[in-house]
Amino acid sequence: MTVLANGGFALPAPAVVVVVLVRPAPGRPGSIHHSGRIRSSARAGFAPGALGLLVSAGVYLGLFAAMPVPPAAETGPGAGQ
Image 1 (cartoon, rainbow, N blue to C red):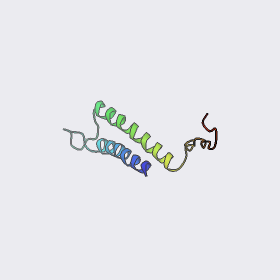
Image 2: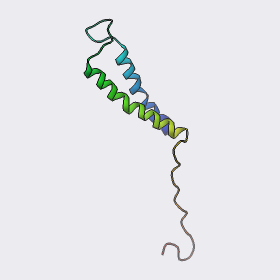
Image 3: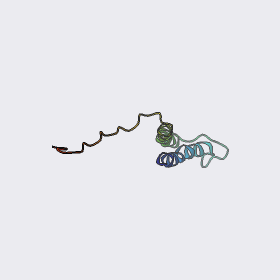
Image 4: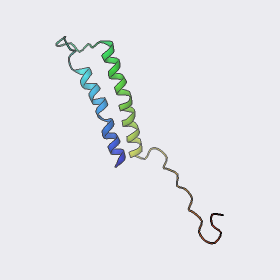
């Protein structure tokens, strides 16, 4: 469930980038040509969002190695000495 929550937090970043880059540029109706500052900021926001989606999808699908399990503790007389 945690992976789905992480993916849910990562999903808005690429969506916001698409909205910012597709909508008309401010002050220039009908033009989608944005200044370099806006484009670079949008790309900088897209990178961690896309990476977060890829990582959360990989963890959800089990593409990464499982967490290691520590060995069981010894029990009985003399254990832990």
